[in-house]
Amino acid sequence: MNIPKPQQRTLHALAQGGRIVLERNDVGGIVEAHCVTRDGWTLTDCTVEVFRALKRRRLIASRGGGPYQISREGLANLRSQLDNRVGGKGW
Image 1 (cartoon, rainbow, N blue to C red):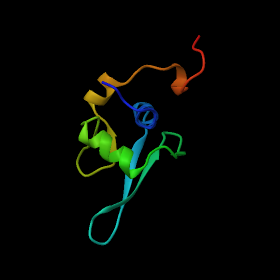
Image 2 (image 1 turned 90 degrees about the vertical axis):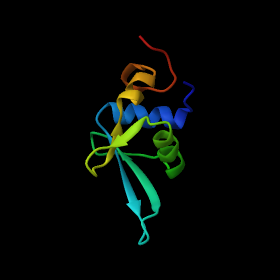
Image 3 (image 1 turned 180 degrees about the horizontal axis):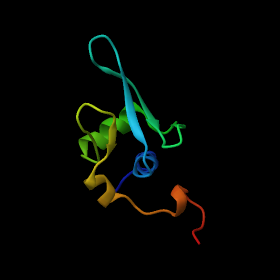
Image 4 (image 1 turned 135 degrees about the vertical axis):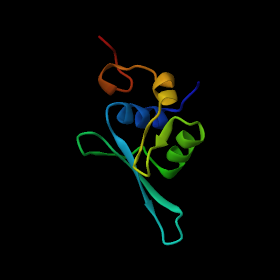
């Protein structure tokens, strides 16, 4: 599956234990999507458009009303990269 770079970066952060937390308005619509890494940092590549694309492809899922995490399909479609570094040379 061909996955654009912002989606790949988000999936890598989720695969390492991150989560996507949504901010909603009064009506229930999604205003912002925040990808929080396992270390507590926020990934700037994660936008509402990236969130919707990942959800549409079923690469992320929410369990029991919690934050969105990577699904089994997401793990299967993720390209392995050395220490989550995009680009550069691997060892």
